[in-house]
Image (cartoon, rainbow, N blue to C red; front, side):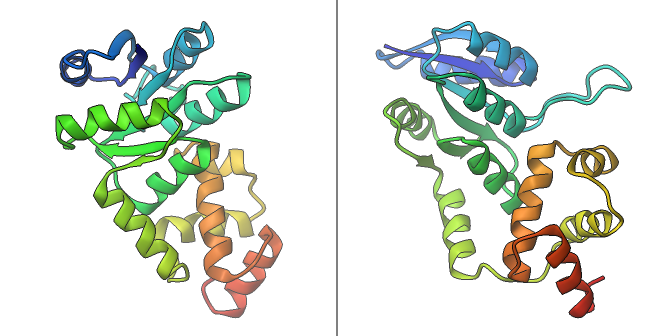
Length: 212
């Protein structure tokens, strides 16, 4: 039996996922979490095989930063000797979101409009340790591989400008309301596009090319 945790801040989404998954004889939903922090806590208590993780959670308490799904995934992966598999199920399908989740350690990435059969198959694949990508996501990744170097996105340019100003990943995250994992993901893309391997080289290359 595959034991699943649902991590999403919308109860109706969790109810829908539960309904689909529990129709399968080999899958059991053993817990739910409305925040990424709660998901990490439940997972660390043990007994979970697969986590269905949303990428973005609610606003939370005013003045506090809310952990995102990619950051929670990275924390789960780094804090446990035998972590469960994380399958991202979200509405967000930008390159930065997809790559950020995969780099954080997610084994799969589905959009919430995926057919029920695709969701069940993805949970089974994740439990076996295989990757599970929706066709749209797989196509995006293949396109990315074929044409890795393109112009910087507006968000990447914002990150690079802050890097040029001497900001740390944490400071950039606070300024742009991003998790550190997402900032790191943006930096990976920036390095790739500029053909460099460090922050200093990225800034120098961007200035040389007239990007900054």
